[in-house]
Length: 72
Image (cartoon, rainbow, N blue to C red; front, side, top):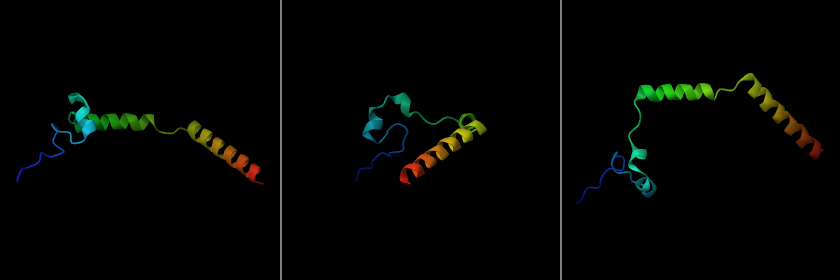
């Protein structure tokens, strides 16, 4: 019985699309400290401010009023 290589091995991406990618794209993940720092920066960049909430609420209320006006 022949043994098949593990799909999760770093050298053999299992999906045909992944096999077609250059080798540097499928490298191993970054060290946990670097990845955690990048995640923290991304989270800070995507936090909603008061102006964002005000714009969202304004657009939501406007759409609600227009919808109710056209239905009534």
